[in-house]
Amino acid sequence: MSFSMLQRSFKEDQKRYPRVRTAYAQKSEVIKNQLLAKGLKLDGLQIYLRVFKFEKELELWGRNSNIEKFKKIKTVEVCATSGKLGPKRKQGDLQIPEGFYHIDRFNPVSNFYLSLGINYPNKSDRILGVKSRLGGDIFIHGDCVTIGCVPITDNLIKELYVYCVEAKNQGQKSIPVTIFPAKLSADKYAVLKENAQNEGDKLNLWKSLKKGYDLFDKNRKLPSIQFLPSGQYQVGE
Image (cartoon, rainbow, N blue to C red; front, side, top):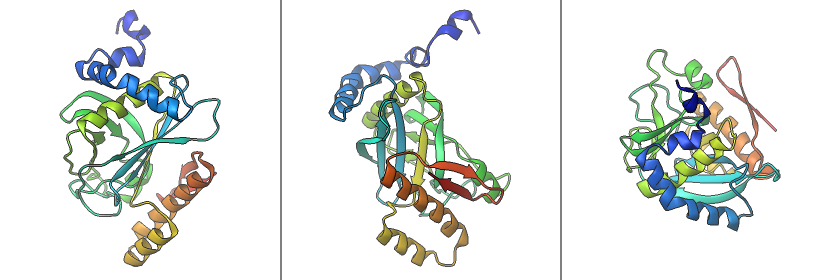
């Protein structure tokens, strides 16, 4: 790797690709206006993504270093789905994962226009899933097709991709993504439990997700997430 490449910022590196340059040309002003409306700015931007499978929604939240709590920037439609409610446990099950994840890679030349990789399988998945058949390559991407990913339109992936590039370029080391079976209000959580009363794997996961959901809705701050030897999550403030 050359010295000039070492000096290139993440944003500059991404903008070498035509689709990313197009996204910036079309979405930079839109994003600045969205942030302005929420009292936020690009400098020091940190973001958080929540995905709700049942509602087919993706929420984008943001904060700046001088703002303690996250603010919801917008909600976008997840325009295709596969599988059913519950975690992904093996390759080929068509399931969209559920759990606490983060963006682990950026693909500016995706087959699905632009894509943001989710770090499935995480530590929990590797313990609880089918060993050697966990699968992978789970993305938030464009093109509105899926066999286990989180698809949005090409127009919206341009916007979300720029948000994520900016956050990483501003120093956010990890962009968290929590994937829920549904919006875990008390009523919806009760229905989920009733429908899965003999499925301990789902119930244990959903209990942890419910705690994370409630803490974030209460505090507008990210909960702390730890992985237990059992594969379960330990969720706290």
